[in-house]
Length: 479
Image 1 (cartoon, rainbow, N blue to C red):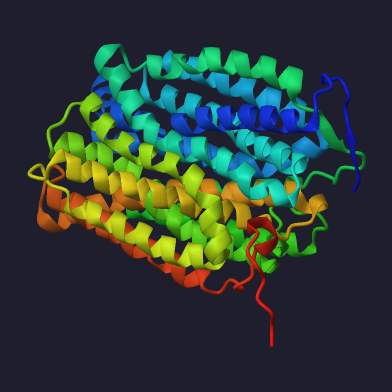
Image 2: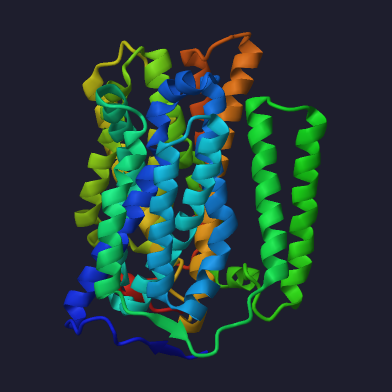
């Protein structure tokens, strides 16, 4: 397939356009990532507003993430057919409208429906934005570009809780969503002015059957896991959802093998750098995806902190993430992608597991230090995953790769929340607790750390010279 580009955007020098594009895409990703976790700190307050159990409120998080997972596969095909600028702009508009509806919610179910609408906008916004950026840089520029791009994507989930805590304590939880409105309007203007409208001259035919099967698979599996983690619904209902999800997944697998352009192209997994990044990154994201759910709740319910105070503690991880910007390229150039993923992954897992030992008797400085150093290593780890994934992907498969990668990225974050909630509920049941105790949070942290430890094991399978063209690492001579 070949691409064509609209020239309606103003002429801007290539280097300046690259930075402008990165800034616009990063801002959109920041807004989407913050919104994915901003509710975590506000859940207890919102539960009182809706007269719901705080533990059941995590459906407001998972419904949004589920919507992302279901609709992200459409993003690549939509961008190829209708143009990157058109789809990116429509996604921001839909996300903004969804935010307004969330702020107006009077019931939990109306909030869930509005979050799903938000998720559809986010499903297009993030992968299409990433696609715009990947098409605008050379491989030599990919590490630097991804480093800048992954900062908002990494600190967004960490900033969500303190922003949510401040708004809940100082204003009203509804302002959590209203703040998206001016950002969305500015984003629409900037995309119109500076994003080029790239589209394929001969876009692939849309895979309607694949979209239906993948949607049913993801929806049933995620809602089944959600019901199981919260202990809501009968065992028959939960089992039926999971069974339908598995059956639809098997049908999709069979369908995709015979379709020339499946909506989720599993043949991409044959590219070693892409496949290992997806699998190892999935394990890490399941673990880290649990943090925005576990940490604020532990600090509020276990430590007795206010929403804003707990939010300021979680902010420490975001501070550590910022230091990654300076250190990433030198580390990659010295030890390469594989060694970075192995050793940084091990350190990140140990720091995540150490959060299980947090207690009110700990000095706040010690908790800040663990979270700050952990934020640095987690940010570096995900920047490397997101960069090496595209190292060997051909340009004509970039749309399919971004859709596939981002789908599983969001699915794993959703699984992280469901896993954390299930571990918390399981520990409470085993201990006979009617409310979460600190020992229950300890058990949940240890479980997600046990999952994360397998990521560096998988990363060891990477070739020692993988991504050398991107990092500038000297390739070793082979015997």
